[in-house]
Amino acid sequence: MKKPAPLKILITTSSFAVAGNVHLTFLGERGFEIVLNPYGRKITPDELVPLLDDSVVGMIAGVESLSRAALERAKGLKVISRCGIGLESVDLEAALERGIRVVNTPDAPTAAVAELTIGLILAALRRIAEADRGIRAGHWQGLSGRLLGACTVGLIGYGRIGRAVGGLARAFGATTIACDPWVEANHLSPADLPCPLVDLATVLRQADVVSLHIPGGPDNDHLIDAARLGLMKKDAVLVNTARGDLIDEGALFLALQGKQLAAAALDVFSEEPYTGPLITLPNVVLTSHLGSRARETRDRMENEAARNLVRELQATTLPTD
Image (cartoon, rainbow, N blue to C red):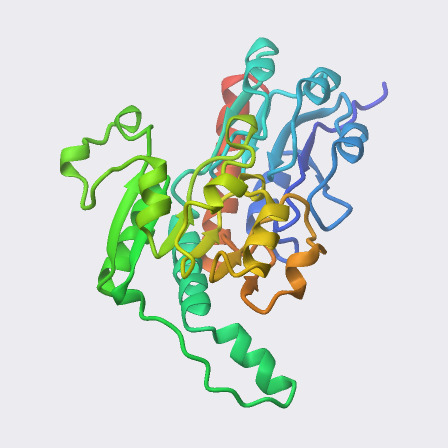
């Protein structure tokens, strides 16, 4: 009698560690065949579909699009375990209709993303990357910057990461304000928050540093467009460690080029790897989607994602031991 093919776990997040990874061992010991992202980057919808064959029962996902069309093709898929926070890349309605369980790791990335955000803020305010590039090019310049402790930091989104960034910024002496229409939905009382909640326009007009910490997706696509960039102070800094589609990158380029904005610091982009015109500007700090890429954080995220996957597969009565 022909032995049935092993059930597969597809891991599409390109940052999932491979060499000596105990979390892959944990999955393999439960009889699953592990299929890794073969591209080493964010996978495209066209690349994803062939990997989701009928023997794939579970998926550890990154931020790639999991559309209705992709989920309808994934006949055997039972669980999507996001290695990260946001779920906006998953068509949750389609998943629910098909009985696909969707889980995430909401707490694990908080400290890493918050620390990187503060690092980017400091790099932009003190012109650290600009000075580094100057020295490497043979130019010694005394570049003047600004103190974080003298700034008002405006947080667009006040969930786990936004609150962590606010706490770190206040430790430097900064004043913080926030905009978040979902605060009460997240069981937070505005009266108990350590900084005032204001509307989006007020954040943009009053903040010296504007930092984005909200989900992407159609509702927030190009939230920061030319009009909203025009509300910001000319000496302000815009920071994005959330999702690339939050910012109209073309409008940002023109604002920075035209000195309508002092600087920007970006860890995420609408298309990655990013090769657009922002790389030509001296007043932009660019990093390659490093938000959760701290060793301790990645280990915790991968551990939680793997165990969440097995737990949810057990709930579907699939054998996982």
